Image (tube, rainbow, N blue to C red; front, side, top):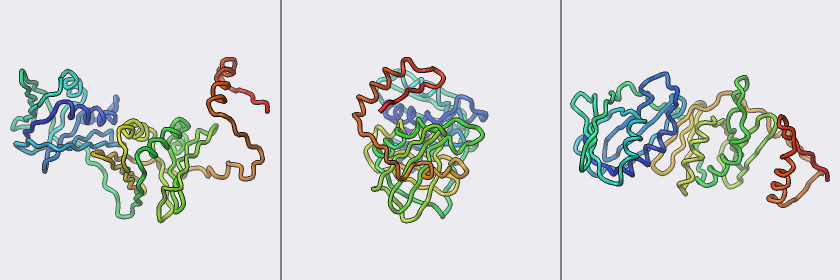
Length: 287
């Protein structure tokens, strides 16, 4: 494998993809990036077996195609020290090391074969597809993620529930103390479907999507979900199980309604919360 790439463009992709890598991997090769150079593209993948993120970039100067895995932390830390300049990547014949060369020096980094790197799961033919603007998906995740739970006994509560039908799409999160619903009637599907997005991939999407303003294509079957946008593809294993009937706990004919300035209410609550019990953080409202 041999190619020429911009240091800053490569670093930007690596920093995004590296968010997937776990600090406690039980499989050593998951501490690496998978580099696949083929058909004019460099595809960079990171995975923790549950979540995988792939970023693609066009490479104009390719001398030899190939694939290899490179230690992620070492590569990112190395590239942080470079100003924007061309870098040449070249692997040895045995693919046990990669040489990174620039105008005034070079690195030689030990690496591993790509054969042992886990493959990204494929969707079955029975999948659902929807399209959501990246700004709306980012907003929906941002408004619901904080309400997810951390419960080992009820893992379905630890993610964001996507409830999709022909009229609307609703993102739901709850920790049994608070319930948040984010509904958009301009996003729908021909058939009713749903899935639970785990907390980690939701956090990754929340961070990365702020950089883009285009549609996100979501495809999902009974086990996995694909989020495709720009030059990225995030694949995650969904939380298995049935989400609680959240609509049943929302009062349908509640006569009590109050309209108030959001910032005034927030600031007043924060001032009162200073004197609240630290265990419960309860604030009493008197209307």
